[in-house]
Image (cartoon, rainbow, N blue to C red):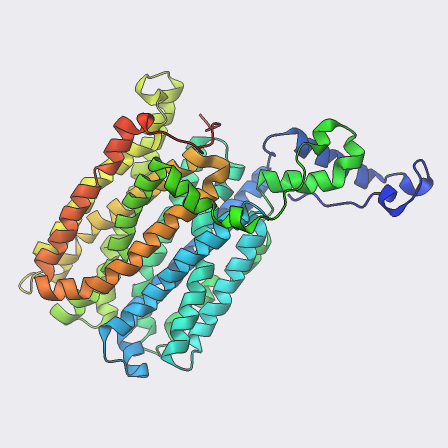
Length: 489
């Protein structure tokens, strides 16, 4: 929990040794706690605090994921209400939200490493909630697009901050990996379930999908307000302010307050991704998976509504295999993580390599993504059942989820205290790709047809899918300049 700052009497000109200077037992305890924080590289957190952080972080991520894709099942209702004539206008609903996912990480990731995780999470989640409500009341389409952009900026915070948040409270890579994996599964379920929710909600009104997302997000407000500060440098800074006099040691002033340098703070993600080849390669792999995810939100209506003539609500059921695939990835990740952990404890030679902690599961995801894209392309024919066509989503959902669980954990392990900036850099790159690809997606599927357009993505997945193999076998040879040397083992 944050250590409160207590004013010292000497600052008010009260002479030493006076009655007013004598400390109460509570004040003495807090001062001692401040000294304790200063004396430790990382503060210790109680089980209750950890549970609060884990639940709040996951709940925020789930709802922000729902918000990113909530219009996808309501395109028809939105188009009718605002008299839209072009599908490209509808693409803007998700693409402008993704612009927010470029700007948000660049702001919130580095800022959380200066002012702390807590204020960033609170302000951004409240902003997300307010602008999601604003979407439901938009008077015209430009206003709706503006609110989607602002909602996206705020919704981006959990995806760039939670990795660092969990790293703050969980030193054990095994527990940290499982926690981040569970966080990612909830995010994916939220993104895939949102079109299903909006497909049914839009039967009432185009506004109802946004109202539904706001109702779901409301319980997260008290949760995020309960979040304690967890970032060690910020805790040391607060402790320094309250203990410079009382600790009476050189250790008490070893962490002086850092000046606010906006240029240094907000350029940190760009510097990291430019100077760290491992971060760049990991970000490219994540960007491909993320682009396919957001392209699916454009492609599924083409396949299941235009080709199979299903209603928006029934077409939304095609997302269920994606959800199932993402769910299957979690136990597989947990089983491998536990096996690695036991092998490392038993002294197995292969398990002593940090690369084998996360990357083998990412390697397993690569062929699954290729299979899923070719299935989607060549099974989605007018003569085949739409149910059979949608089954390929199990492979895509599994691959997407496994890639994100593996690579986001890998980034957290590599950059530890700087992981928020590293995640911000990765989030920025994949959001750029998630904006560009969906704009070309509908025209590509229209010109090439479903089979060959999906095959293009399958071949691209095959090519980019070599990245985790390269990192696994040759990552130790890649130079690193800013990686935290104290990677937990």
